[in-house]
Image 1 (spheres, rainbow, N blue to C red):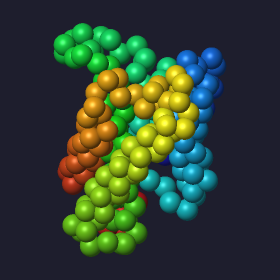
Image 2 (image 1 turned 90 degrees about the horizontal axis):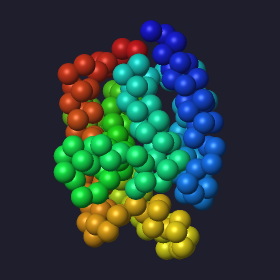
Image 3 (image 1 turned 45 degrees about the vertical axis):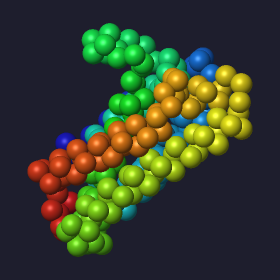
Length: 196
């Protein structure tokens, strides 16, 4: 379906506009929603130079839509109680799903290097995995800095640790597991070198 990226973009514009109205914390919304919007803008501007496959766009869109929803409520306050209750969790795991979804970006990273012929077969897998892990670690550092600088209610809301002293490590693990899942998907059904 050639228009799939256009449909996703149109849905995202509406999603973004609706969730920009009266977020729980405007400061947290700006810190969370604007980077996702930046990724959408980047993909839009580079679309003619490199068009990803529909599965790659779908995987990236999952994180973008999920993250934008989290930005509206702050990740700890998204109404996700039914999952918490269903599995007997002690905390809201909306952010863990978001971190897993970050890992899904390993698919488009590997797709890019594979189709461009930029890395040998297994080196591309290593590159995609380590790129996601590096972003995961970097993001945890940014969360810490933002929380320390913002203080007040916005700092802890952005950090979203919900009292878990191992939150950062668990988030990075979720990113990594998402990347491994995405690489398995690519291995099973991804485009091959030289194919669009």
